Length: 505
Image (cartoon, rainbow, N blue to C red):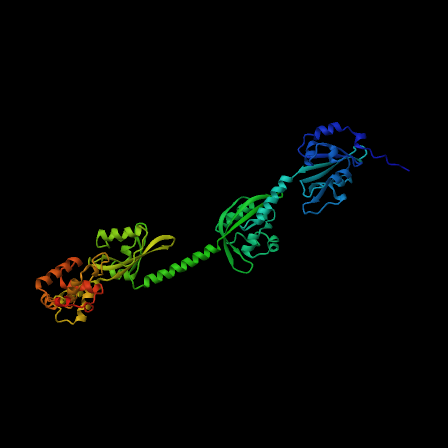
């Protein structure tokens, strides 16, 4: 019966000195393990990756290592004893890459993330393993960066998806994209770029497809995302190549343009309604730029009033077509607008195309049209009204020269029509003496100086002196003006008791 030779350890078959010299300076951590599960040696990198300075602190055996360091997979699943990479390598298991989180015994949170692979050294003569090697890389920084990216990607309100370039399948999608489109996460992650086409109707679609195939940056462009419930959403999409988990990927980010499209449509409809109303308005109107006052639109009523048609006036300023009757009027109006004021019923005279003058009330309103600051001009022709008012004033002047044949009520009404508004800073009834108010009351009754003298029982010269003082105080020089002044201030002639001189004794 043949008996197998006993298993020789590394101590019995080789000198560790040469092996240590080879691996001592490596950046990767190297742990040499004897087939009898004794930890023979570890380079400085392996010790540092476990936060220790000596091999004894790492553990003299596989059991001690397992007691001092707890390992779990990245999905928080804790490794059983037989699953530890150090256990698997001793058992002769060969593996190329295992990623584990390493926690020091007694601590709650992991300190490092290690990527581990195995290597078995066989006896050249007999083929039996003489040494097993654990090669460790500290990938903590890489996975922390990936965790930070994952957190920021998911928390970012800007919609985004990531596709793998190898097969163009989506591997990540954030909440912003799901909310914008109405897709479910599982519906996105099982699809490709062309199943959920993020480049649909893109203005540079062919260029984007070329860049995607080459793994190069995709420039911003407008596109339409088809929605699961029907319809589409206007977006700006851009692609940025990234590396994720060692695989080339493309990060697509989006800006939702649907609110802008709706706002633009609403603005367009509003401007269309305004334009229709503007053209149909019976009031003469024009629209001009606030800066420079160049006209950009006039309506038919404006053309009918001034004689200027749209082709000959649009693109020119009101000053250029000499619409204003004088430079003073133009400077006054333009100065008010440039000072940020809107006009309301400002009286001005304008010149028509045929040269005749038109009296108008001018009103303006600052508006925004097509994103530009503009002024809406409105003109009310009051030429006929002004002529009628002048004729009325002249008629009043004529009839009030002789009021003896008018009834008192008619004369009062005519006086009020002709009288100017009361001057708040001028004289008042309180400035007149009692005798002067008596004289003024008799003047308002239409009496001449002789009649007033008889009524008061005084001489004619005395009456004339009273009248002159009244004129001087209230700023008039005619009896009709004095009567109008009194009535404008509510002075009622009948309310003043006129007493002769002998009654005051």
